[in-house]
Image (tube, rainbow, N blue to C red; front, side):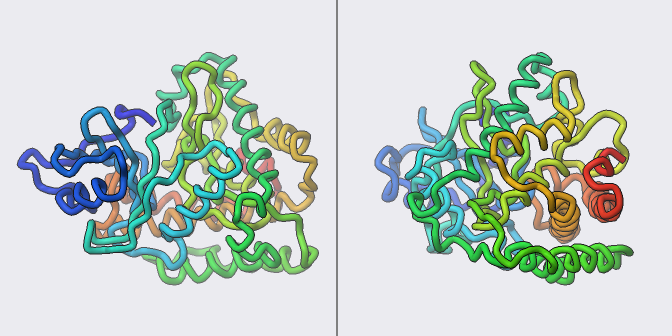
Length: 369
């Protein structure tokens, strides 16, 4: 994450950027952080890629931090919990997993108008666009694919007890609760009726119901994809994994499925209608999805026999998320790049539902449609 990855939000006349109150925030930081000062100017820049929780780079002199807060409106239940994200980051720091270290958690909404978290600023690159990815050599792109899979497998081996995350979630019945949760979220977030949503949800629930009651579990990220990683320019290694707002204890195969749905390859029609990390992994050196699956299976040793169910669930979940972003955009509550692409987010939900139905009959190969 570098300053060039963000867009300025401070108005020329010095007014507060959307979602922040700079005066109270500066006072809070001075009291909460040992290296912040109440008398020095504080600037904030909105990170351009944020579509759910909102992230800003805060700068004071030569020091930088990252602030995360919920969206400005249409906050989905349990989806934007600052306490949860702070707890997860604290636990991951305890076991040495590559994620930003949390520095402060503020529950007092008088400061900026919402709860928020402050964490360390991690230097590096974020590969968020096809242009970003084009700067990688084919060798570096291939190396990065391996690093991404290795880091996911490493996350799924985190000792939950050692990290203090044993109460993060209820792993038994995780997939069943996910289907029902995202079904409820669709009902409160939809901007129109969308054919196929109910049928897709019902197919997933029927398949989940016949799975064993107790499945292997781990810490799951919930939104694992390439543009949620900070890359070391020197080694193409992963310096930090970002955006833990949906993390819990659950089925690790669900994490792999989300990464596969976000992946893209040249010539795909449905995936390229989703304007998130679009075309990032189309270039030379990037692996196809089957190579990602094979590498993960080898690294983790996990049973992937229900991957198709998790892929359909990932399509359904991401369709609901895209629709919620569309809802916030329509009502003027969305910040960042997604606020400018109202039609694209609506079409993304349509495409993901269609992709989910394709997966129900074609499995992993259907993602290439």
